[in-house]
Image (cartoon, rainbow, N blue to C red; front, side, top):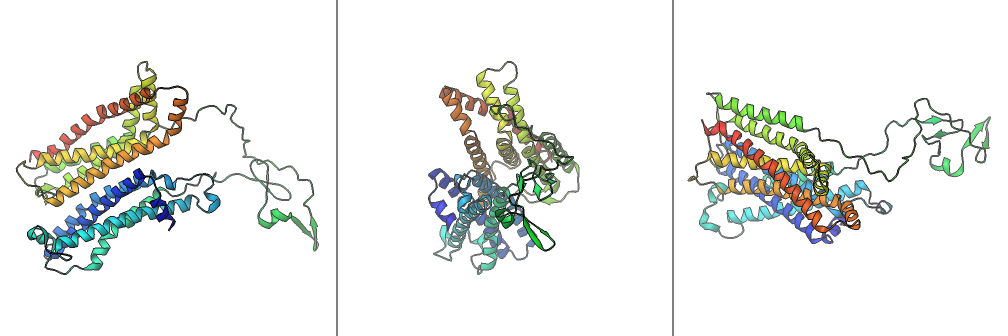
Amino acid sequence: MLALRLTRGSHPAVQLRRLLVAVASAGTGFLLLCTLGYAMSHPDSAAAAALRLAWCATPLAATVYFAVAVARTDPATKPRPGLSAIGLGPGRLMAISATTTALACTLGSMLALLFFLHLRGDLTGMPFDGAAAEFLASDTPLPLPAALTLLAIVPVTASVAVAFTLRPKDTSPKNTPRSYGRFGAYGKSGTRETFGAYGRFGAHLRTGGRTAAVEDAPTPAPEPAADTEPTTPDPDPTRPPAPREVPKGLPWGVAVLAAGLAVEAYANRTADTDGLSMPGGHVGGPAGVLAGWVLTAIGLALAGPGLTHLCGRLLQAVRPGALRLLAGRVLMEEATRIGRPLGVVCAVASGAYAMTALYDTDAAVGPLTTLGTLLVTGCTVATLLTAAVEARQARADTTAALVRLGAPATVLRSAAALRAGALLALFVPLTVVIAELAALPLAHR
């Protein structure tokens, strides 16, 4: 009930993002139901039905990724001072966020079921003159348990992913050395620790059946531990925090990307490869090429933060001014938050470019392939925009401080445009080159 109230009272922009999550869930649920319809209408083609179900993993991953990004930017579930006093700690807020995501995805799944039943003619007459009757198995009763099981995949997966991503982080120091005095335990700072009623009413010593109160006894000095180092406060509290570490995924991303391109080239050279049906009707591509595309996409996602950090460094090279310095520092600070969704967008764009190079321009692309392509592309782009909103929220205090110091608004807008231009100048040529290399094995078969 609390999650429903927070959902109703949210900002319109937050409601729009949740509505987009519901739309993405509806599209993925409809693809899953269409796979069920194909399996019902083709009972002898179990392998083809399983392959169609496997292709639905890509829209499912894109939908879950988008749902996690929306949950991270939800201001209603951000930890704030005072919420723990009324029982809304980090764990409770995480549960509320997961419940809100499950509600949005369930709404989309129900819409997908209604639309699927409408196309089958179960609710009204057969629409579109029965054009969709072949792959929806309109002449066969729909197994409701199987349909509900498929529709539950998206809400369950999205809510579990949100709960795992927003789980409370344990920030307390591990294995803190303690020194024990004569009458009790002392922490690292020398303060005596008390536990429960012992600390409330005073510690007592039992000697020979007689209880001696030591509540007013002088506290002995703690015995320092050998491995305990005294904590010294920062002499300069106005010092800015240390910059974040450089993302370490660039070498791994380049290695995985090169491995994916190598797997595609090797799969093209093998003469006795089995054909693999791909969305849109393309048949005859070796399965190794698909594995190479997957590795290429993973490599781009891993290398995205490192490339974004490198972009920020290049902006600050060769005697930078205030504008270039501000834009570069922001890119370096937000490299992990922006770089990973940007790498995923580049992977999807390179895959879409490679797929268009394989098909004949006169060949018709099926409606389900178009829906899946639009779903994956839209979710990845929406995830990138949501990450940009999250980055803007994260640096809101810095922006407000710059405005108080007298920085004009044109400088902030120019810095944002410079960041966007630098990212486009780096990632667009990289995406085109990788797309050409990915399409090369199948284009010359």
